[in-house]
Structure formats: C-alpha cells, structure tokens
Image 1 (cartoon, rainbow, N blue to C red):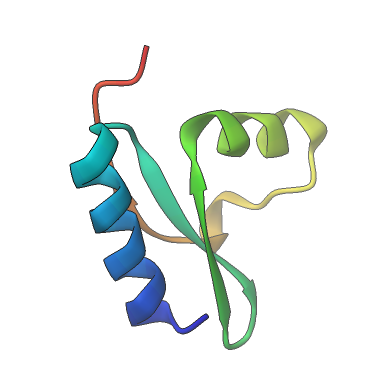
Image 2 (cartoon, helix red, strand yellow; image 1 turned 180 degrees about the horizontal axis):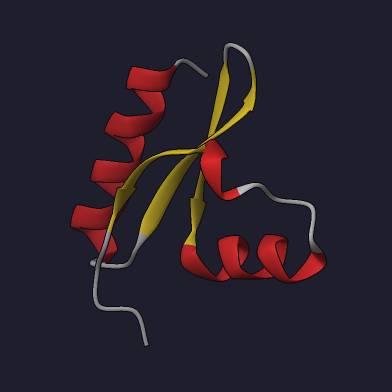
Length: 62
C-alpha cells in the first residue's frame, strides 16, 4: 500500500483501539501497518531495521 494510505489506516486503527501502530517500509514503494506486539516480535527475531519505521502513533498498550 502507499505511504499515505498506510498512515491513514494506522490512524483509523488507533482511534478504534487506542493501541500503538507503526507504519514500516517493506520495499521502496510498499508500506505496512503493524501493531506494537508485531513490532516487538520482529525486533526480537532480528529481521527488522528501526530506520524502516516511517510513522508511529502511540497508544495505551498494556
């Protein structure tokens, strides 16, 4: 999906659940929305570069 569309989806998800969401760049023109548990899992597995986060919206995660 496009960068702007992914950002808009992250905002919608945040409004619905008040959880943290991140937009990451997966390819040069591809973006994906993930939540905080998915981000933490990807970071623990080592298959994630922090500089690929292009947008984040922080909520009240437990």
